[in-house]
Image (cartoon, rainbow, N blue to C red; front, side, top):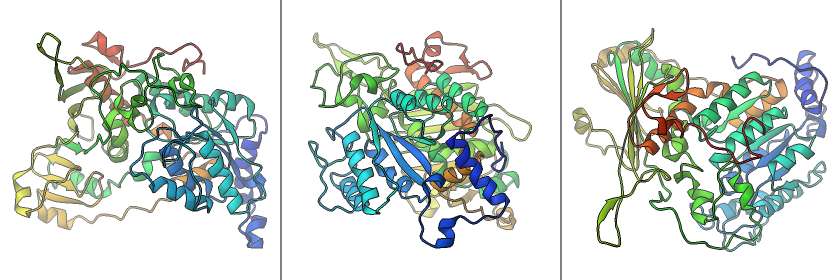
Length: 513
């Protein structure tokens, strides 16, 4: 659906429909809102979008300011299974603390946990209420708090939209529950860390009239110049695409933890596990480090590939891969009898990997091989690159054609240049400047109020969702896979088919949530 297409209304009138409909109606009869005429900057409560914010971990708090400071948003409800700021990790010991102090205007605010890093439901409540107190928002009645999002959705009828900042394994069930309740939804990547679950969520988004938004779309660069060079014949027929990241920047565990540290006070471990199988609590599973586990995270590609490749997939029409070929490092150990052995690891992502995806030819292009690299592995450096006397970047993207190469200055597709190819032709091609796009929160608010889909919708996200989940399946299976994209099935490895979906704990089934 195009961005300016309206979604079809449902029967009946709810506050959510009124919020969306009032903005559209006002625009149609040229009524200027009273708060604009008054010049006060105050938005009446009836014009605001009531947002439930799920996920009060470090990344959830880091992204809270851009949501809560929007004049047409009211964060009314927050949710997290961990109450207290205990055992959170972050990129610096005080960076997030200081930014939260700035947000609420209190330089003396403390987390109350066991270190300086904020996190958890109690901190979230203090920060939300503290911000509204600072700006003297008379409409704020104090945010409500929940540890269980299912209870929140059942009890709170005044919510218009949800922002999900939970761990990867909870994204799918949370998104599905929100959409079934008719709530607009903005969420961080991935849509799900299982392929079939991701497909079900995207199908639900396509059938639903709610506005959906996957946050990493905002960081994707523009493919306009690259497509102009490719389609103009500067590098010949495109054959390969290479994207490499210095991720992971978190531990990738090579053993399942066997010790049993105490559960932090106020942490509902059962709710945090959600749909995943029961196991003993361990801090190695949670917070920043969850990304390295197949059960809880999506690895380096799910973490970073959404930011770099989504726009590339859209432009090149990369979908329905047929081969996924993993290469990765392994880890060895010594047994008690002093025999060396290789650890069979189907529980955590490898320390470094290279994965090839084969995308078949279509009418407008030939077959393309996509290579993803992480953990410090990079593609071979083209000979002509050495002539520039600069270092091969730690993160980058390269488009290889039959007669040339396009590189980008960094991980995304920003600032591309032709390294090899028809340089005269490249100079003659006039590249149109990409249009500016408003920030994600602003576009999401406009989409909700105007009752339409926006760029970065879940409806556009299947090709990237398919790729990042097949990446995990291939690494976990440890072998090259033949994939039937029309039936979502691996045709040469039954074990790998078991990794396409999860076995849900009772009460957490994606179809029943």
